[in-house]
Image 1 (cartoon, rainbow, N blue to C red):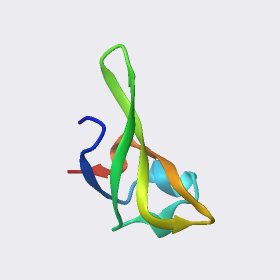
Image 2 (image 1 turned 90 degrees about the vertical axis):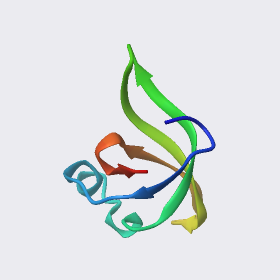
Image 3 (image 1 turned 30 degrees about the horizontal axis):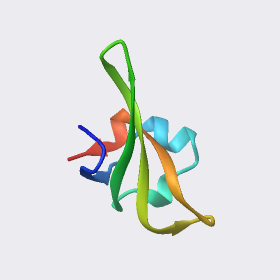
Image 4 (image 1 turned 45 degrees about the vertical axis):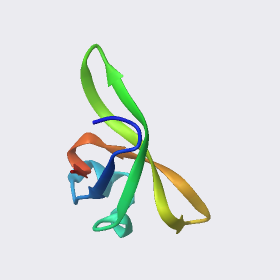
Length: 66
């Protein structure tokens, strides 16, 4: 997983807690990988369109499908 990769956003408890369920099923491009000591926690992604006026969102690892 690296910047530039395309992903699909999957449902997860973490995404629900963040109130981002409407993003499920959308595709996005990874902008930055949140990697702590070799463990990927999630990614900042660029959506193809806007959601709540923003294109860039943090998606937890459990919601990232490749």
